[in-house]
Image 1 (cartoon, rainbow, N blue to C red):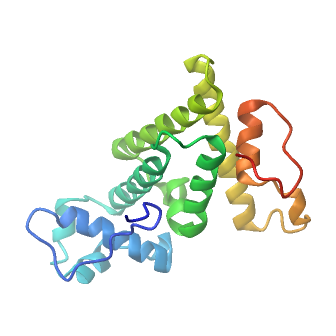
Image 2 (tube, rainbow, N blue to C red; image 1 turned 180 degrees about the vertical axis):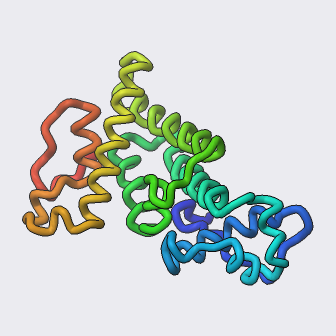
Image 3 (spheres, rainbow, N blue to C red; image 1 turned 135 degrees about the vertical axis):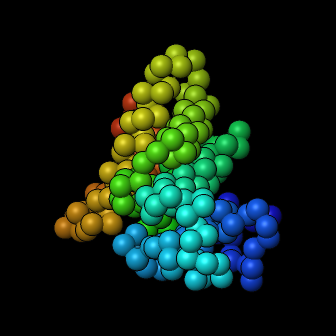
Length: 203
């Protein structure tokens, strides 16, 4: 069974009529992960998938629209990993941070890099948040829907910050034991309990 965290949809030798948009997104993800946000261009994508330079513009009016679609796909991928009913907040946090670690350029785009914005991205973010709220609800039970949403947003914000600090070297001056483990951080936010000692693994 394919791992949803690694299902990057390797490029095909060509595309079938009607799925050029999906092919451009797949190839866009590959180019993003090779060269970062700055190197991604519709013209280069057209060359890579073997279509005319104008063909991508039938699906993406500009580069920002392409970035939006790629960021939205990232949120859908992460949301899918949170959907199984057995996923609780500690495991959910691990899955989110694992995706971020495996796909740093993609995660940067999802976190706001490149200026991607639009209805498709907002919908995908909403789906991700809904799954994260579900993870929180399964972890605590009995709380109001509003409280579950607040806790899910707090977990999301904390994980975004932790990933950004690690990527930028902001915690490099600290002993590794002093840097919160994502699962422990998320569980502490949701339960209100102190984080366990370094090395202890939340359930």
